[in-house]
Image (cartoon, rainbow, N blue to C red):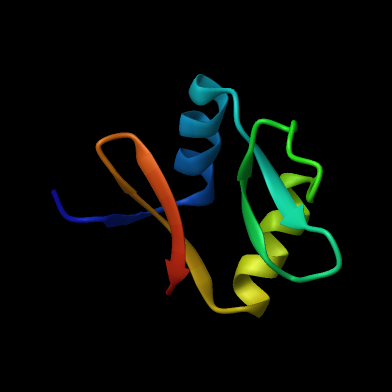
Amino acid sequence: MAMERITIAKAKQIAKIKGLNPGKVKGTEGVQFTKGTNGRLDVISWDEFEAILKKRNLAVYESGGWMKIMNA
């Protein structure tokens, strides 16, 4: 199944169902989804997450309930 670009609103819905939060890799501009238990990630706000995606020209893609952050 192909990855399809989704909106932040859709990503929030999927994340809520899966118990995920937006996260930022400490000391970098790297972002990913986290359950908040990874010591190398800080949980961030959805607004900060979206701002980093825009700044780095990234987008959230989904396939079968799995999300991935890739170049837009």
